[in-house]
Amino acid sequence: MITTLTKSKALLLKIMAPKKKHTSWVVWLRRFTQTFFLFLFFYLFIQTAYHPYNDVGGPVTFFFEIDPLVMTATFVAAHTIPAMLLLSLITLGVTFIFGRWFCGWICPFGSLHNFFTSLRQRKVKNLIKQGRFTRGQRIKYYILFLFLGGALLGVNAVGWLDPFSFFYRSLATSIFPAINWGFEAFFNWVYQADPSLGPLHATSITEPVYEKMQDLFLATKQPAYAGGVLIGLLFSFIVALNFYKARFWCRYICPLGAMLGVVGKNPLVRIHKDAENCHKCNLCIADCQGGAEPQSDGGWKPSECFYCFNCVDACSTDAITISISKPSFVKTSAKWITNFFKPPRAESINLGRRKIIASGTGGVVGALLLNSHPLADSRTYNPALIRPPGSVEESDFLAKCIRCGECMKVCPTNGIQPALLQAGLEGMWTPVMNMKLGYCEYECTLCSKVCPTDAIPILTMEERKPIKIGQAFFDPSRCLPYALATPCIVCEEHCPTSPKAIWVKEVEDINSAGETVRLQRPFVDPHRCIGCGICEHVCPLKDRSGIYVTSAGETRNKGNQFLLESGIPGMEMQDSSSSSSDPYGSSDSSGSSSSNSPY
Image: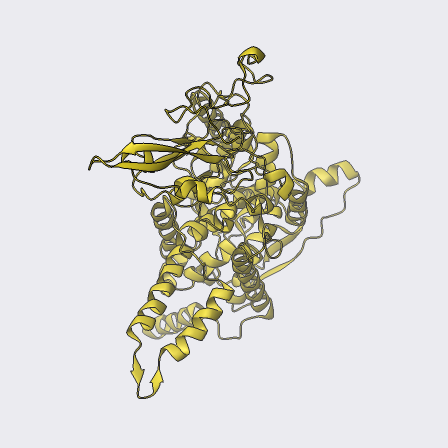
């Protein structure tokens, strides 16, 4: 009896032992493609920069163009599809036939999760337990229907969790600025300390390296983003979840993965299991990235399978294979099509119609609540909501923008920032201008060249220059020549328009010592000001500038105007009899008047 138990135990240990053979060429090919597309993503990320001419390097929006979730959400919300997004139809077509291959072979965010998953604990018993399918994997499908439901009413919030938008935004606003700061701090320390060993100085090595790194990827100006810490913490948390469950994001959260799972629920390429050769060791589950249940008799779930081929590699008896299914012959083509594209019950995830309807309804209700905000129907305008030049009207902008962060990364002055609540909750992480951190470069159209959804349509330099993104106003209680009788014309010197939108008037004033001083007090020409914000950015008052820019007069919103001109809704045409060649003959927004304007 003891001998029999010993033999049985030995046989069991032999079966449970890891497979002793080389990794198959298919797995190596998959790893190669994952690495290639991950580095391609990083390369295109680096190319989103000023070079230093008004252009970007390479097709920087490539991954967004092959993302069918971006295409679908943009179409549902804005009822239009930018031409390049039609490339994502290729992704859908291949997924329809070959399954959810995109997640396992192409997606760079999935490859990053796969890398961190490979670093987790390697106890086979725990890996088998964690590798099984769980009901929580249905959550990503409900997230998908929630976003699509909201998109029906024009709230395109899919960019919050779209994998490419999430990954790119995290890199642009948090990870890259942190890396850039780290390198800058290190090289600056070496330069200042100048450690040496005899005649050999460390700077003789670090300075050439530093110059080369600046040419390759380091920013010329340290980028900083409002909310970047929050975005970085969220990204770190999502990545850390891979140590809890293999590819946690891909299994439980990713709406793009859910969409591809729906499209590829009954693929032509399938996993086949030979029940006679299977020893029930469950080693195929240990390295299953998606919880697709490859060991189950007829219960493999193609909607969750990434086609990583790990299960095939792990099987010591070759009981699991992946091959093209050959549907059995039936008399009528209609019946053949019906049977072929209807997945077997054992493979379905069983989302439940009521839960799907509830998810979509939740998105619609959420959109209704968000659209009830005063900003949504243009009853009011947030003065801090200044969009990049060329941005479409606000409701259309929110329907198209996927919060990817491309425009933020490419902005050479760091002026484009992720919004917090300036545009309401639905506008979180959409791009807004922050003139304290940067400004809108007059000779730049880069943000329009990298927008994948035409929320910022492509502009030529001639089209860009007259676009007004806001209006500058002086604060006489802060501006030095007004408030402190101190000479200053920094804003006028930096004004980029020609003729300048800021002009000065020479006046005499009395300072605190009772002395007469001649000052040049600045004024703004509202017809020439484009709201670029460089005046606010360079103002010597760094806490709160003496001149500031608001969204008033922006070209994209015809209701947000203040000049009494014809053709503007809600405004009466100015009486020609009261007009004057000198627009400054009466008191202006600066709180002063002028009767001798140089214009």
